[in-house]
Length: 316
Ligand code: SF4
Ligand code: SF4
Image 1: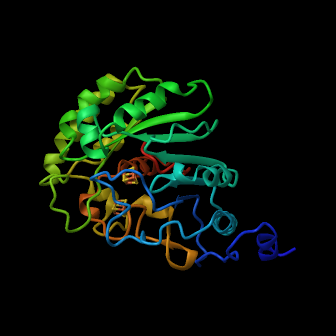
Image 2: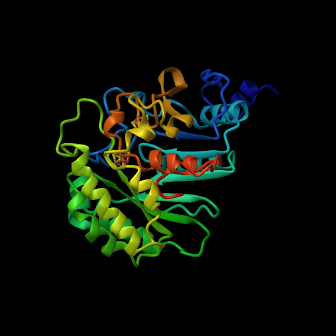
């Protein structure tokens, strides 16, 4: 029985569509936005920026998404998948099915739907500071909800749970307080990444120049030295973020960026995936990019490690 006949028999509304042609290249890693819907409205969110393909909300049904992911996996040799949104746990059954297709999976969640138990895989949970500052970004009550979910989960279930903070000029002053707050929580580690602005972004989230950001990177390096097991960052990778050398890992227009070797799958028109310039979307300012994993990948490359390193900040 053909795939579409199967779909009809299973009562699936839409016929299965073939995925977009992304060329013949291999991609060890990919990232899929399983939904463009989210229950939060974080001030630093890049998903809902104007230039990103985010208007068709949940236009790809489960059967189509799984079908296309399977075909893309086989064509491009994708081994590792990052499940993101919007909030991916809004479609948790789909995520759990999708995870069966890949060797290594990471779910990036805001934690408000609980922490999924996915033994052998990684769950990255976002908070952006201690309670007050984080709630100012993510919404009132979110911090306590996430904290409760972290403490209610079984810490021995085999899931690697990484807490991640996105540092911006707005919340950087709370960096040390955040580490003190969560350092004894039952998590596998703490990760940090820095804000990635678009080209016109002159908001208070962005540092006036990269030298101003350097001071925050230095504070993070000091914290890493103080809590080497808790904080999942390499000092050498953080040093590559410093303003005098960061362009070596990026290139003027992102041509050296190792993150561009992964395949970002946004939901585009007509129930098909659309690829963006990088996982942060189409309109990005590479010269001010703060994605830790850009520098982590560059660091590994400089060490001759040609293996793949999952694209979340937490899994190094
Ligand atoms: S939880 Fe994530 S997807 Fe949702 S608004 Fe916040 S940053 Fe964006
Ligand atoms: S914005 Fe950052 S992650 Fe995206 S291509 Fe530029 S350097 Fe790479």
